[in-house]
Image (cartoon, rainbow, N blue to C red; front, side, top):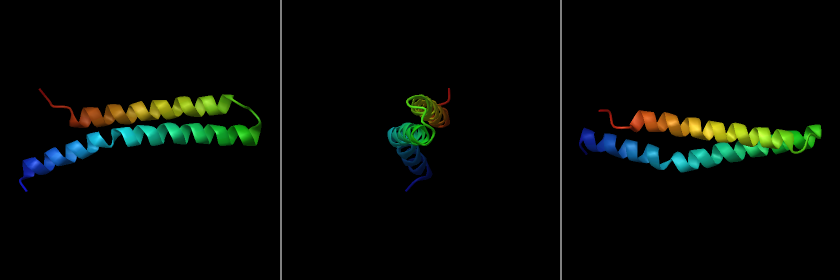
Length: 73
């Protein structure tokens, strides 16, 4: 396989994994906040905070992947 083809496949696989990465970040934030809510009795505030942090982490990962694999002009 040519080096250019390998680079193209590597980029394609990184971009294809964005959905999974975003889903995992959001679910982990939500579950972590829900777990803390159960322990501390602060429902629903820590769950919502964890969800917000998970969404922020998901979009940060999206941004980093997009910048890494965006075609440079």
